[in-house]
Image (cartoon, rainbow, N blue to C red):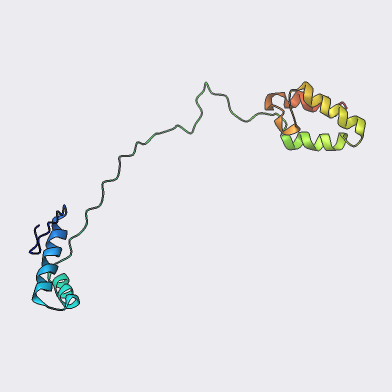
Length: 130
């Protein structure tokens, strides 16, 4: 779009180009800008914006029922809470605390909460023997 004043404006949106041309013509006539814009906006129906296409979603179906080859995750292993309760009961003396620390090292654990689940039953048995 080339204006009378000697400058060129390139606009990629045709509706914007149309609006600018209308504004320029209104300004050239000396009409109040606010009144002209109000009349122009009432004269043209508003165009509905197209909704952007949502990206395709991939649905993944997972079977909530475990297959026959899978083993259930629930075991009869004592919980960390069980181990802590017994350790608190047994570890009242300094000698017992030292024995519990040695037992933890034997099982390769830094604390009761890091005793592996598959070793908790054996840990509890030895803990109760202290």
